[in-house]
Amino acid sequence: MNGVLLTEKIIRIATRRSPLALWQAEHVAERLERTFPGCRTELVKMTTQGDKILDAPLAKIGGKGLFVKELEQGMLEGLADIAVHSMKDVPVEFPEGLHLAAILIREDPTDAFVSNHYATLHDLPANARIGTSSLRRQCQIKELYPEAEILSLRGNVNTRLSKLDSGEYDAIILASAGLKRLGMAERITQCLDTSVSLPAIGQGAIGIECRIALLVAGAGAFYIADYASWKVAYFVMATAMSVGLVTTLCLKEPDHKHFDGRLSEDVAVKRQNIWRRLSISFVDAVLHPFVEFFGRNGKVGLLILMLIAVYKMSDITMGVMANPFYLDLGFSKKDIADISKVFGFFMTIAGAAMGGVLVVRYGIMRSLLLGAVMVAATNLLFAVLAVSDPNLLLLAGVISADNLSGGIATSVFIAYLSGLTSTAHTATQYALFSSLMTLPAQLLGGFSGVVVDSYGYTVFFIYASTVGLPAIVLVLLLMRYQSRSKAYNYNP
Image (cartoon, rainbow, N blue to C red):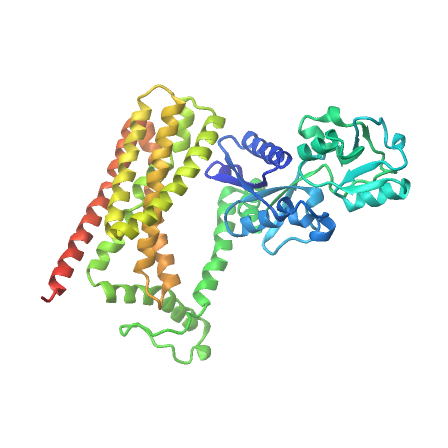
């Protein structure tokens, strides 16, 4: 993974919710942040089928792959960038599009014999009750101690230990690595020799799984830059992106009625040369959607496109400098992560839900106006934060307000973009609109650091707020146009 790329985004780490899984994910997060200064991580906690089904042996409900499927699905759906696994739970085959990117240094791979009354496995009485969830451990122990009663034991490490302490078992078998990572090494009565219990493949190792595309764009770019130069790395990344671009242009649109003002006829496409076919594909994929859009909206379509281009500008301009701003104020990375994770995440979800309610209750245009005003106003709160002494409560309040307004504005704006598309060109029009939404804002955001260096954070946040004024004006103009159109079309 590329150090430069890692400093520009939050790395979302998919993990199970058990204490051991969280320890492993936090360990990976800490390693990433230490290796790549400025990198931020965020844990995406998930519950797998293996965590839900606790009343049946793993071998009967699908094996250890049940502990990774939901995490892999989360990555494929874009909910997380990487996933952290215990390697003993990882199946041999990976879903298409995913890849095992790294394996950390292995901890003690042995199985641990844990008992409150017996010093070794050999000391157990003939009819001892031994708890384990592993079919591998059951078979090996049963082979050596056929009279022992092997009982199923499910749950996280703390749950299993509490069952032992309550007297349900005479002894239990756990992974030594898990107990050591959780600071419970003293609970290990005996580390079993591999001749007694051969560990699972990968036991004690932590694996990092990611999307193959993320591996290419991250580690791939880093290796290319290391062996050649950043110029070559960016050229290779651009070439890789062109594969999807050319594929999109070559794909045929689904059958639909074209707008009457279409720019070309699809005649004998298969018999045309490759350049002719590419030009027709470009017309169908890019030009036709715009022609259809202006055919429905006329000159006001220019106002709509201008609104799309500037609506997120204030939010993105400010967001570029948010993390450096927090650090310059003196807040630790842990403080920033804790507050943004707890307050930021939930306030964004709440804002998105409120946005949907506002659209239903007050309509799309009024909700758009509210979102634009709130985003511009919350940027001014950062100016207040810039002139105040560092205060975690104030930081939490500002981040909460920013994420709430951002959630409202984003959900309402997505609904607005969706309503602008036609059934004939839904995918292409939405893709063009969303690209137009981010391109100007990202270009302007590139100068955020220059403004901060020249004038300081207070002026920058006032500037970022001012950048949101064109969006407010354009929403008001479009609302006025719609009111006039309704009045003109009204026939008493």
